[in-house]
Length: 241
Image (cartoon, rainbow, N blue to C red):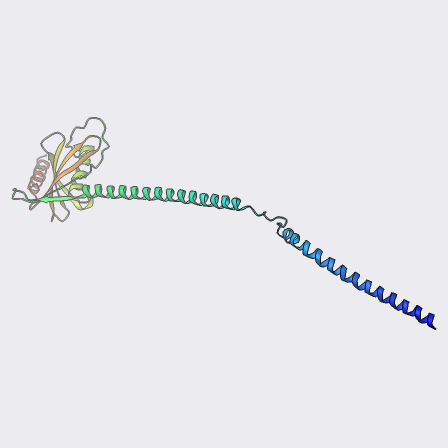
């Protein structure tokens, strides 16, 4: 009985020692796992910071500064180019406006009309303006021609109407004669109703044709009697024939 109990006690003691060793082993294993985790985790974080596939790797602080500086330079360069383009466009627009203003000023000068009084009792006022030549189909040296079926006569009539500001369908040209030189002429014209009468001075411009130089607004048509006399003479000639 004593021996059996003694063996039992030794068995129990051995079992308890085994359990203790097992517990210690488990505890040691857990402790080792915890230590490994503490050691490995920082490296794991470093690995986690590595860029994923397809992502750009992080650059150093100097690299970032360089990229930012390059971006700023590119932005500044683009801004400079945009500013230059804007300045050029603004300059072109200003030049265009100045040219238009100059053209308008020239047109205004050419269209400017001045009037003055006259000592002639039959002249209401004198009109002067920078008229343009009417153009010509004639070539070579110009010779004034007062034949009614000539090209020169047709162009003189056009210049006379231009000075009087009358259209062909609303005008009567009563007379065109020499104006004191081979390249000058004077025409008398009225509107159809004969309520407006003008004496128009015209001058030849080489290769450009006749142009008005002065217009006198008349009280009466001083060429009307001459026209009537011409008609009466023509009728008498017809009767005599």
